Length: 287
Image (cartoon, rainbow, N blue to C red):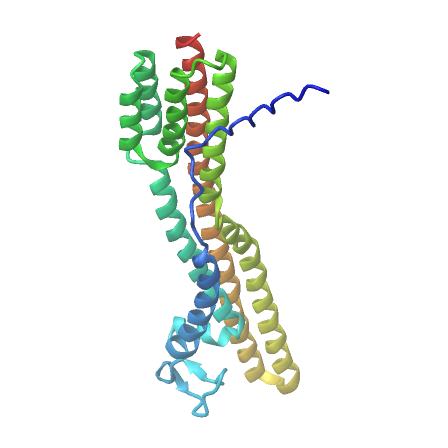
């Protein structure tokens, strides 16, 4: 009879202290629609209020034909139906600038990242992991979270007598990579709205301008004479409001996108430095 060898127990999976963040993206779902609706409300009922025109359209409706705007702001109303969309785009940019500013500020932590990394390096050089963990609790933010996850695995590997040093370092590195994979998507989320509007707003502004020019030249062809020329110059002025809104919105989106990506790059560099600090420290202190 053949000898039956006992089956070796399955290797236990290394537990990770990094936990996935349960975070929906409700802002990305609601904000664009709400901003476009609010843009129309501002254009129709605030900028396009009857009192802002010498000859208002009493019939009202979706797009009243008001005449004689009183001032520069009411002239935006006559820029056409693209204006409320551009106002909505500007509101979307403002909404996501505020949302990203709050998120990235929180992710940056409570102190300077470089000083935090140096303090952890100092504690690890003295083999005081608990003080390094306390520094992570004080720092918070994405770098603090990644460093804390790595330090927990670091502390676990110190007491591990089964694995070689190289394997322990690899386990610490894997823990840092898993924690990083959970943090980075939160930093980059919703930036796509800023990058998209940076391109689309300018095109929408040009579309509104072209539509206004077509309308103005159409009146010139139908009526002719000095009155038509006056209406043409007025129509061109009104059409250019679309261009101004589109370019202004695009400029704000581009500037804030670059600001946020620069700050995210700084946080990412801090995360990378954290992983390097942990692996190099362990390899040097626990050979």
